[in-house]
Length: 246
Image (cartoon, rainbow, N blue to C red; front, side):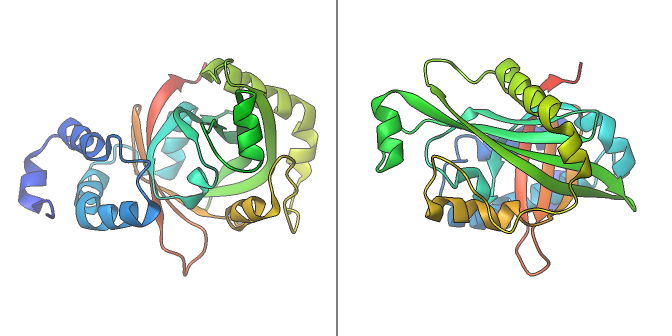
């Protein structure tokens, strides 16, 4: 049932946020088609109501707010679950003051076929990091993918926020000059440990330059609208603050 606009107007901003988190709790593993319909039929009125109360509608003002570590708790971006077994509490978006950010996630399936089955036998996990540049151009967010890094690690060693930040910092330190000068992406991705069919799932998103917009952002919660190309349906992501920038 669609939310009543008058009812939503009566809710405080915090109540709207709590309602959105309540509605999406434990639903990020739903099939993508179901989540798209769920946004259209249920969430969209709440998003629109919260958008009217965005405390930082000016894009330039959003930059200092976004710095730090966030975890996506619900999303309709296909990229998030291109691999099975993503550990939701070990998914991070890390934004740095130098204009770089990373999407980092751990995948640890319990029982899968192919190379994933081999990983499970040795209690291993696959950690994936997509690194990007961000800046403000003409009053809009501009995002550019710059690299993908990956690692197979022992599952017993948890991918904590601190380890994710250290991994990101280590790669940046080694490749910052390359990233600063990068103007275009390769025509195809080459990733070890993944078969070609899986890699192709990543390519469409990684090789694009998506539009990026905050429907809502404050110190604790972000609702992000992204669109890979004009003809594609927009995707939405709800992210919660895990750590402030130091």
